[in-house]
Image 1: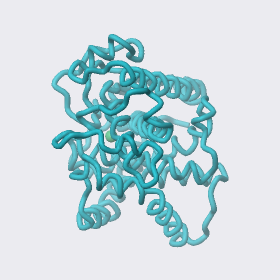
Image 2: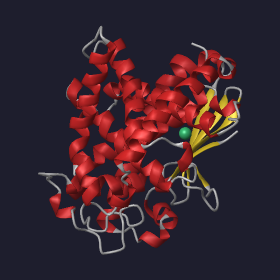
Image 3: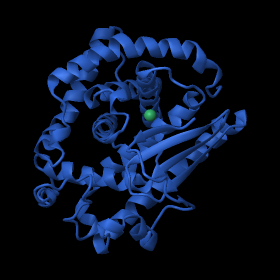
Image 4: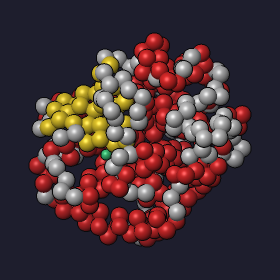
Length: 343
Ligand SMILES: [Zn+2]
């Protein structure tokens, strides 16, 4: 069975044998006129993401998949939608990422970073004309790739990794082999994928090959996971055909970060709390402090319509704690047990 996150697509798009560059990128993004600095920046995004994922997948294949006779392949699809999916069964899976996914994430990251207080890329804060937004209009103000800034490129790569890990978690935890019976079960699988994606992020990002991509400190790592979760959660809620099956972005951050904290604790990279409530308060505070600036930026951006109201957020949180968590426990102790990757 296929699990799809993001936009539905009219056609799947051709399967690409390598990450797209140059003419191939232009053919996929025909309506976007990707030339000069904008084309160069797009090429950087694909090259960096591909090398990071390939590096991490090599490790996963060697350490976990091969021992169980599992394979998880991956492909870029030649279409400009925001979509990632995973399909297959019984240990043989494939993750497909539509090319549009990377550039939509990059474009929105550039806009939000430019709109943050004290941004070094503030020159890109007003790239858009009325009616345009950064999902459908890819960084129109960028003339040289460097202008986008390392903050935005890093945020975009982090959010892409987190989405990739989310798909990987669907496969590893047996979700592709189970058909959810209702929206509650579908939300439970999404929640499980988010938690495990957070754990993978918390374990693997320390080991990324490029020096500029290694976290500078534990605080830096927490901040990166929280901001990437915020951006990804916002885009998925905004653009998905399955929107009702997703929790609100603010609440999904808690799940991604919950998985991350599990990793940080096991690696000795976070403060340990004997008291559960004290731990919850500590991480809640981190979410608030790391999100404040990007949340404000969202409110000033071309994507401001995608902010939820606080009432939505509270209701959704209640649903997540009271229903989703219970349904997930039942699935994990039951049907998913026989499908997941054995350690
Ligand atoms: Zn999913």
